[in-house]
Image 1 (cartoon, helix red, strand yellow):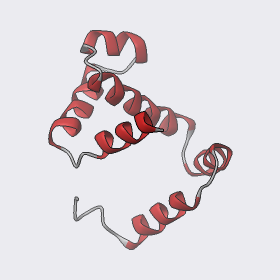
Image 2 (cartoon, rainbow, N blue to C red; image 1 turned 30 degrees about the vertical axis):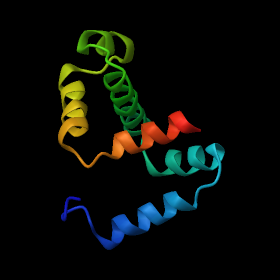
Image 3 (cartoon, rainbow, N blue to C red; image 1 turned 180 degrees about the vertical axis):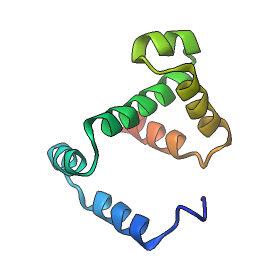
Length: 96
């Protein structure tokens, strides 16, 4: 974990997210918290991660999601050298 990220404010944000119980609650909270573009960017990165894990090419991903190759590369770097957060969530979603 990035030590610069671990702050009381980030802890409070994550605690708030962990309190959400439904998709509707998520929409309400994240629409208040984020701009439309921020939320769309986050969801795009998540889609990119799922597509990379399924073996799709950068070109396929760019065409399907509209993500730039820089974004795809950044997500790929997180998949290969990050904290395995994407892997954990994608695996849990597969199991549910």
